[in-house]
Image (tube, rainbow, N blue to C red; front, side, top):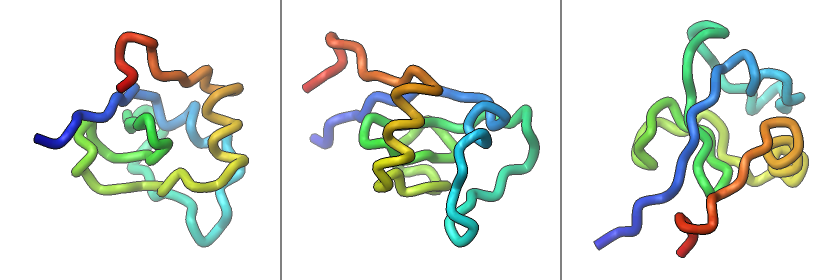
Length: 80
């Protein structure tokens, strides 16, 4: 059985503060839309890890932004 990844919902307006590279900038419907940040730092359109990926989350600057600006962290009781 596949392990379920932790995710947290964010309003697009908060996520858009990151300086996405132009070629990788996610397309959002609106600033009030909700997207999901997963423990592996992928940004998806829905809560499931299988939902469309908006940003792959591999850039160090993105991970730093998530930790510092969005205060993203995986709660201790959700870690594997």
